[in-house]
Amino acid sequence: MPSLGRLHLVTDTRPGRDPLTVVRAALAVARAELVVQVRVADSATDREAYDLARRVVALCAGYDATCLVNDRLHVALAVGAGGGHVGADDLPVGAARRVLGSAAVLGATARDPGTATEAVAAGASYLGVGPCHPTGTKTGLPDPIGPAGVGAVAAAVDVPVIAIGGVTAATVPALRAAGAYGVAVVGALSAAADPGRATAELLRALTC
Ligand SMILES: Cc1ncc(COP(=O)(O)OP(=O)(O)O)c(N)n1
Ligand SMILES: Cc1nc(C(=O)O)sc1CCOP(=O)(O)O
Ligand SMILES: [Mg+2]
Image (tube, rainbow, N blue to C red):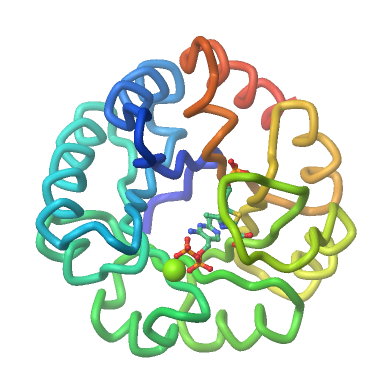
């Protein structure tokens, strides 16, 4: 399995957002260091998810970047994505691994060390850990766990930990110091006035 990129862009398909423009801008800067996770609203149809995912797979291919699909693993398989990401309301990690196969990248959400070790034992190849900080992007989340919570998970597992939730370039250093391998963002890129420049800032924060 190729090494995992450190910057994960999770697509923002809310009304008024332009996910493909943001993906193009981020890819042009981060190239193979970018992982694009195609995440659509629960209300989106499979056809809508498929159409977005196949476009993202094609864009990523031009840069050797990885495309993952959130939740809908049949869409991941259908578009030839590099893998998928599952959480507590999705297929269990072991079942997701069986669906995707041994070579795929499989991310799992973990908010504490116990869930994290179980997810890795079941076949997760990385963990999405958060919410690190307050975020307005997703409702219904538990309280933020901060860098200390990320560190507790990172200390318990030997797979990459991707910190998510309210992450900005300014908060990356503390997350990295706590043990995060990389970060996943929605708003820091999707809401940026210049997504290419925001990508460069996040990458700089991840590599210093
Ligand atoms: C990198 C990363 N980490 C966590 C999540 C959240 O996944 P999940 O808990 O399944 O919630 P939804 O994104 O499906 O609403 C993620 N998508 N990516
Ligand atoms: C999709 C998602 N999952 C989270 C979790 O903690 O599981 S936080 C989140 C949204 C992250 O968006 P932003 O970068 O704009 O805060
Ligand atoms: Mg999910």
